[in-house]
Length: 255
Figure 1 (tube, rainbow, N blue to C red):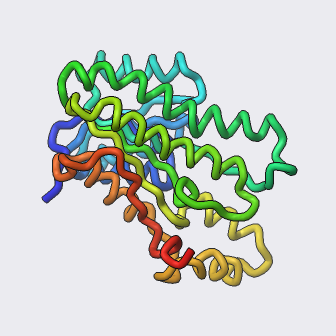
Figure 2 (cartoon, helix red, strand yellow; figure 1 turned 90 degrees about the vertical axis):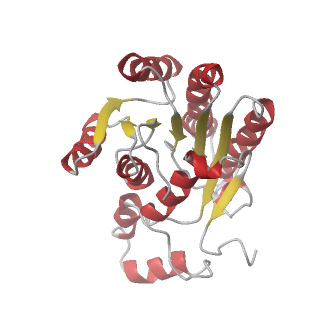
């Protein structure tokens, strides 16, 4: 059984979707979870669900694009628990467009959240992990971190950056006892996707279009990405670092 017994875990973007599933999965595996999100109420709801299930969790409001706020969040975790054993950089945003239809403001917004958010928090937790000689960072990238898709210019660029950052950090800190990995999910059936589908006249038809590129002909459930994150965060993955784990239902197998 893979466990995180008494590990202290900080999960960003934990208000819904993949982040919420990871927070709940980690808590069930024995971790003390700090669920963070820019939506304070959503983070609080995730933490409340975890506590109602008999596990341990607190919530923090956090905009990962704010470097000072990231440092403060890590400091708060250290003040309450003395350390941070696991960091999951999940918070992220998307964008549709080519380079010609993506303006500088759009690109800057994605860069600040997707890339600088990962930078700020990783930089904040690493010194403590290195000092203790143990720790795990799991970055949530995307299958578009290792391939490309039409009209996803900015998103693809930032997710490729996360994969590169993961590999670079793993090489730099491989002898310290800290492991850094990322997950590259295919399409995931999150509340955001469900809300988007409802905007279409024929949502079932559009859903089938979204599912079609996967060999399994379906999208992932958030819990399936959470299971991969649990493995990478745990001691079961003690010899895994610098990896970009593809969890995409075969989407990239035929590309």
